[in-house]
Length: 315
Image (cartoon, rainbow, N blue to C red; front, side, top):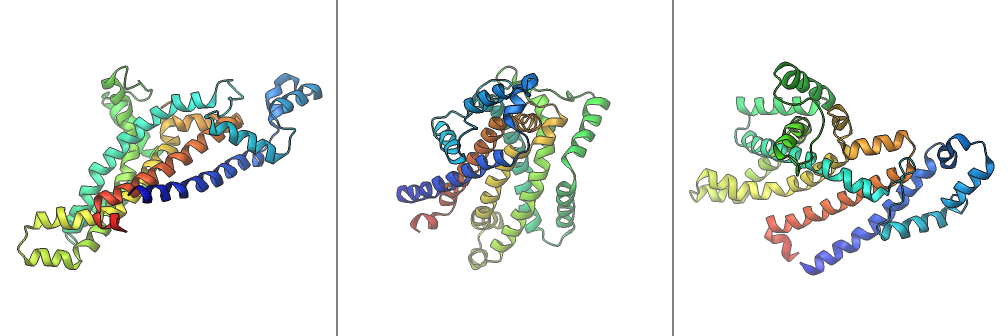
């Protein structure tokens, strides 16, 4: 286990290095001169522009700029926001918990709905219940998040008045109010995750139920619920774990529209504002943090493989 983990970490580091090169290159591809953006009213003064370029090392070769930026990143310094003059790391640490709470709630909703629905759909294959579950899953995949969010605001906030239409309260300040402000956006995101997990769980369960070890367990007289839960589901969860890690990372990185609709001050709003304001250090920091999250989630998924399937520990 320890040797495998070291090998896995050895694969992660080159991946992050390649990602860092791509992230730094994005700044060079984005339109506009950062010095002119920062100069503001003095954008026509060449002396001011030269001074800004010198301070930001924009007058140096690209490889020197990259190495300087990478060295700071390795020390936990993502630079300063050009727009609000605050450390990028501070902005990320402020906004990431907001999106993490929203993504975690959405992921829990997705698992609670998607995995049981996928198991039941596989067990009841080609029955009316199976068709109904697949129809609901197709609706969940096809429905745009922004439309579902607007419909939920109209129903639960405008018509019924049960939940606030927008805003955010930190969990540590008022847990109940925090849940009331995030339950609708979490459900909007969770329905898409539930639909994807349902379809993959169903496919994995159908494959597992057709295996010889399942037929053997049934021939021995093992109870059907034990066959499904202990023999089929445990093996079917392996591909679902991979998908779950990807979906959770997607929730952290892709809740932009949902956060905009419900006015959630999270990761998505931060990166959208940074792109519109051409705040390159913030964009680079957010993208790098997102890539790191995806890599860590992939590593966690591999560890869960070994916990779910003991045979992988000997490989």
